[in-house]
Length: 202
Image (cartoon, rainbow, N blue to C red):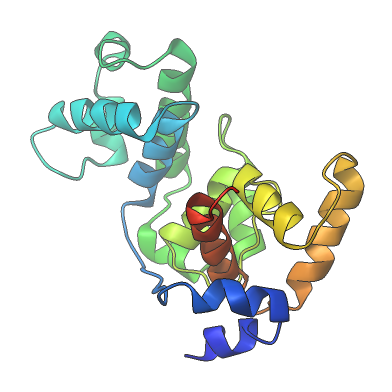
């Protein structure tokens, strides 16, 4: 596939790609729900986050609640599934923003990456990293580089022998290296995450 061929031009990256299967990006809907799920999972283990999200979905009769459905759930009911006050407020912020701005999945899928980041980071509780994850994993965008993701930072400092102490210099080096990966930086991130999680530590 073209993204593998392109990324393989980077010799260090080629070794990393050769050890892994090809990734396929998917396009999904219910973006408001994916943002809510992202808020719920912050600072939690994957296992705990999955339990809380299952409890959340159990509050609704249908599998995919609308923004209106979520806002109709009382604050205390959301607290009782294991969410903090702040997380409940952030989830409500997402739903209110989607309703007020008449945001639909179709409209979000048509928007440019930076346009979408500028729009969704207006929501209190949603930062750039969260929107980047939505772009990658829900909207299937091929060229997103999550420079502030800890896993990406750890993988790139190890692979390219970057000094992680000077954060500003590290970010600049990462961005410079990632320029070579355009227009497939999302795939590069996927390979880096997988490599970091499975690389022998000795």
